[in-house]
Image 1 (cartoon, helix red, strand yellow):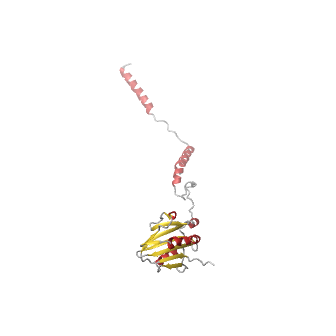
Image 2: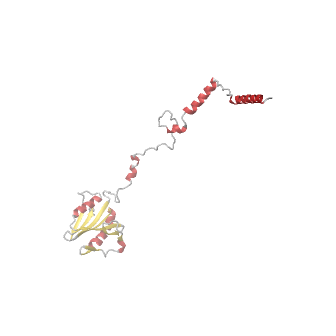
Image 3: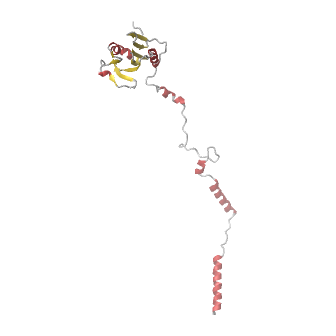
Length: 230
């Protein structure tokens, strides 16, 4: 075989091989039923909201049909009526006003440059119990060194820490607290007595006891005025 014929045969073989390689595959044809099934599957997959997207929809949206989780449900709002009993059990001050239950006993000393107040506030029964001892310690036996009271006769067992910066001294007499305070001279004594009356729920026209000594410079105060004993 000549070289020319060999070259022609090789060219034909390459052409056949290339033709086989580049020959398009036969296109598959789908039936109408298969097409309907594919469309239905795609519609269910891409048109139905997922659980995550449904939860993000606002409440009331027609697509949001998932039940609300108990973790996200808002608790019931409590009303003020339920808090009223608790508030009634919380007194607004250390010594709540209970008209007819509390009593005050006090002695006021009007000195030249200062006014001294000896005062006890407690239940009527407790004030009745300490009245005699109170008057003995802070009225009968108390003396002044100039304008300052001499408290050296008070037993050390009665001394107590001050509970207010306004006090000069604090004593405990049979379980009842006695406060000692000092103000400047020329005090309006009756204004102070009226303030004491308000502290225990008394009105300005309530019956009180005022006993004056030493040319009205020493005043014994009892609130309210004790009832006369038979």
